[in-house]
Amino acid sequence: MCQGRQGQAAIEYLALIGFLLLISAPLLIEAQQSTIGLQESTDQLKVVNMLDTIEEASMLVYAQGEPARITFQVEVPNGVVNTTIENQYAVVQYEGMRGRTDFVRTFPFNVSGELPEDPGRYRLVAEAEGRTNVTIQME
Image 1 (cartoon, one colour):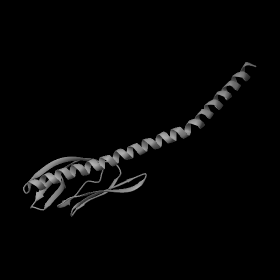
Image 2 (cartoon, helix red, strand yellow):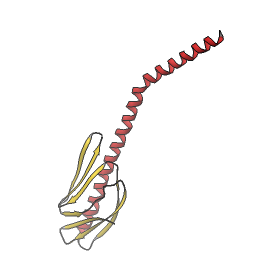
Image 3 (cartoon, rainbow, N blue to C red):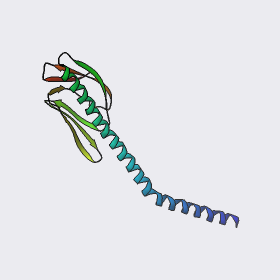
Image 4 (spheres, rainbow, N blue to C red):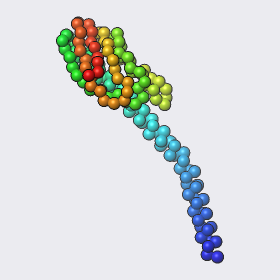
């Protein structure tokens, strides 16, 4: 007789745990989506910071003219799928859960070179060429 009551208590306990898991599942899913959204926002801010750093270095060597040269560091976040720097534009394409976004920076002078696409920290060199051009290269 004692075993029957223990079995009933175990089943009631399992039913209670199952019910609590059922109720908490939407909360856990929402928390996970919020965490993913926060990570995506952080990565997008890193892209903006990367472009700010490139712009600052480019403006500095452009103002000084040839043979000015500066080495600086940028961090490329996850989600960057393409980078372009040519003419008067630097473009970084970022792809996240919300789709693809282009981050664009324009310059009042010609810029050219290459920007990294793979996630990580990179050392770049901005170098003035003549009076109207700045070149960005990976060191």
